[in-house]
Image (cartoon, rainbow, N blue to C red; front, side, top):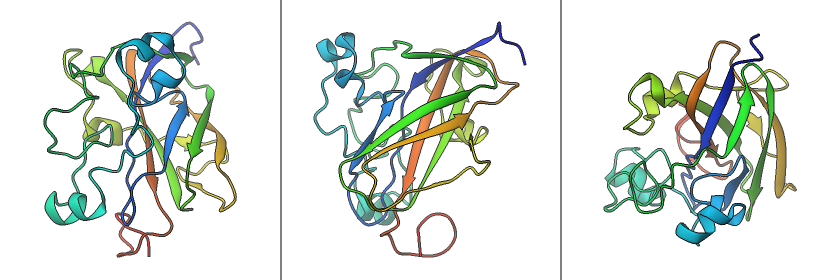
Length: 199
């Protein structure tokens, strides 16, 4: 492991609810939509009071209208103008955390309403593609991160509202600008057992 190589993480998250609107946010490292709660620079430019409701436009809109598509930040796929993507009104471009490659990092998720289900975490090295562009879902999918216990899924306990997990960063990934994504598939969703909805 190269301790001299740092992974700089610019945080965002993707929040997916099949049956209900989003009820939570990524607190640490802070999501783009929630960073204003923790950092004065974001509080000046980017207060977003719906930060705990990043649900891709809602279940019906995401799946019936958009065919399952969602922006990487949890906004509806086709919303105009977007607020949180690179170059958008609430995008500051500030690196919010720095980590060492291959390390375990603490992650905190706050649920304002617990719908059980599972969390997944992903990482994209945007400088590998083009620093002038944002992360893509295909890039994020290249690095599905392991939780400390070894699984890529964290199963949410029904009584928890603030959840702390340790996530393992890839030992071979270094970047000056990475994007971190949190994905939440709720347990009270219903659908088919294909990973897109819970049964």
